[in-house]
Length: 303
Length: 325
Image 1 (tube, rainbow over the protein chains, first blue to last red):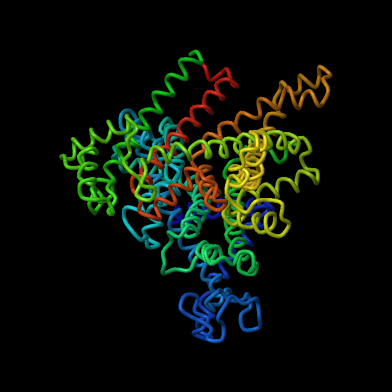
Image 2: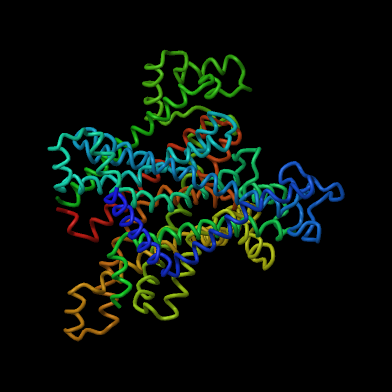
């Protein structure tokens, strides 16, 4: 009991140490605050439809508006060409971005970590087979391959998009995790576990997984950015889920309805949001990288 | 290992990967729900023509024979007829491919050179204000949403300020005029290419600059730089001749690794600027359910990525003799 508590407090200590290093990092702090802002937006997205059904991002149409209007007291960011409120669409977009980014990134790190650990631990034929397969997926442009698949399977809904993105974004993680597994395998504690009679599954999941998890989490933040970008690009090209409002979708509407020269209030916000949310995850990732990799920290002190 | 053997080995690997992609696409197209015949034969064709095409493409054969037909057709350059253009797919691709290669390679080379030379300078002034400003700017540039920045550039440079064409690759009236020589035509293409090039490069420069900066910082702490300083070499010489070339190796690696991702951006840029390239053709074909064209465009894009990968690998081996173990 006491031992378990001590171990727990050790983990907590390590976490707190990492956290303070992260928070001292300006880039990480900016990223975190940006992210909190977007999280707030996502939470607020539930409010406008409650005030008045005409603020519903998808179906709510202002009966007095027949074309795109600039910002006004009733519509703080203006409306689109059929009278839907842009602010409420923008808020909902934050929710979709988080949903897509985090689930797709989580799934791709699950695939990547599993495949990387198996390849690194098993070695030999299985390793080279899995890695050649990873190479093949790595040279395929993820956006275009998802597009091609959508032509085969028809209209995509948001969950299929998430699944497809994660299916094509795991090889990078798998390579890193494989390299880590290879070096872990040489360490004495793995031999000891084997001598103690641990099965392969137990070694992989109890002894290797906890050691590669920080790296996997780091890669998850980078994958979030690429998942958000791929989803936004798909929606922008007209292959998004027609039942959701995402920022890419908003850009597609402004582009396709030919409002990009007349309605800067419509063109600017979604693009700024996509760019900033990817920036915030990217900044967090870079800061986390410095926390996890002491070599990068030293670089800051050196000069 | 000599350079030639390295090229040979990498080419073989690339051939294997391409064969896997080729086969993977075949099985996807033929085993996905729906009728493969209707995917490859234009619904508006006359029944006799359709029958001829079916037997030509081997679509009336069992699966394994169809696969052999497919491989044979690929080798002979026969990809069927595009539904939209009503012409052989290979002709359409042949017209689009050079445009993509022109835009794509120019932007990759320009942004790599700019990233390397600016990253080198920024690392030199580490901790100064210019370093902070440039680093943050590159971070922002790196995460800009490409289609949006493309729309923004069209809006600002082509619409508000003017002086740049809104879209396309050539001005038709200039090209139909027999009086205009090749130089005028080349200038016209360059004029149309500037905005797409700027869009595509701005995304990459940030990334390459950041990599160059951190790699340069690492190199500057090496012992041989200290030796160079002790020898009394000028700072400029140390930066450009001793540290720079070694530090630029990770940038080259990264160009290769991010090629597949860059071609996504290329396709988006082509679409927004209506640049008649192969990426735009793929997106267009997918929207119109023009399966033969979509399939072939994807295959050729894969070839572009793979060949570019090979070029980057060879360049790396050329720059870093240690690779040729």
